[in-house]
Image (cartoon, rainbow, N blue to C red; front, side, top):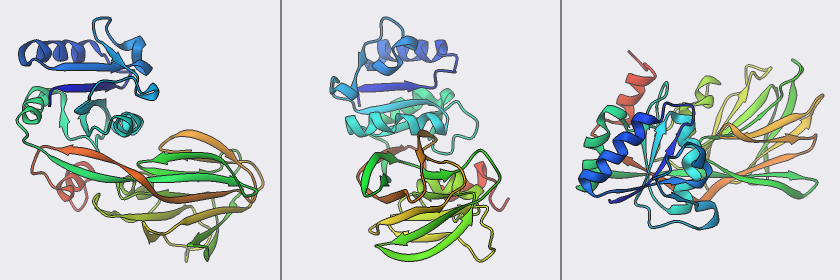
Length: 284
């Protein structure tokens, strides 16, 4: 690996990051590119690429400096370039990150020497359908969340799988997530933990009124539909914490496994289970 796209949490002190990248570029003959979307925080000497416009060189890896939210925002670059993500944790939890800023040089050396593995993670394709017409479509690496925000009054959501009615729930909202997203909002809502290499869609509800309402795991080959059938105020659809769209009564969110995936770089022998213990304090 010789050419890298760089995506950074703009709230960070970016000076030390770019100084380190400049030093690595000089000593190791590497090429680093910023993205046009972050042009305002990229030093003038660093060339920018524009994946959204198809204007980009061959990218071998996307270096993401920040936390999990930054990685979620960087997924589009990975999808458009076909390059894997290496997360460098400069955030709070960094569950999706593989390394730290202190280990940046050794991590880059591992990439150059081919000492890494690739972990393939599924994405969700999410369509917001209104009166039979798709009014919004997007991809989610973590989750699609339906929620209401203005009053304590519940909404009613009907769940379907492959066109078959599963159950109806009065609740504050619902989450459809990937195995990657199972450790995020889904976990807070009492949903199950899934290993990242699995292919499944998890549906969990937020504060359901009935104790009998439980999360469900569907095969990723299924088309899952979440339909809002009872509503006293506007509800909202959010993908990976962004792309907020208003939902009306009888609107449907159609969730399927996307045709594209995102690859993550794995450098160490640390297992997913060890990460659960160390970062989520599971069973400690």
